[in-house]
Image 1 (spheres, rainbow, N blue to C red):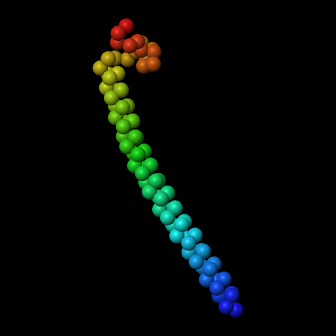
Image 2 (cartoon, rainbow, N blue to C red):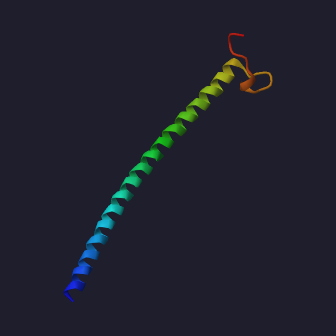
Image 3 (cartoon, rainbow, N blue to C red):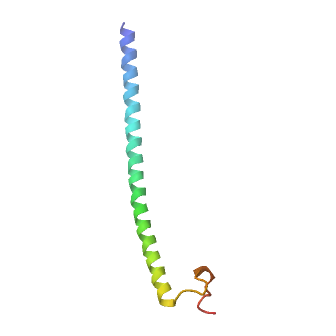
Amino acid sequence: MLADVDLLKKQILELQSQLAFQEDALQSLDRALAQQQHEMLVMRRQLELLRQHQLEQTEVSGPTPDGDPANELPPHY
């Protein structure tokens, strides 16, 4: 009977240890996800600013004959 109690205590301690490890891992993943979400918001804003800048440049220089900026000649030609 005493051995059963000791076995149960050992199992409970093992479960508590596993739970603590999982909680730590979950918190770490949560922090990483929050950081990635923040970085994505920053990159989306930067992309939008680049898109606006490109549109402004197109308005200033005028569209290319075929409308594709990839076919536009560099300024030194």
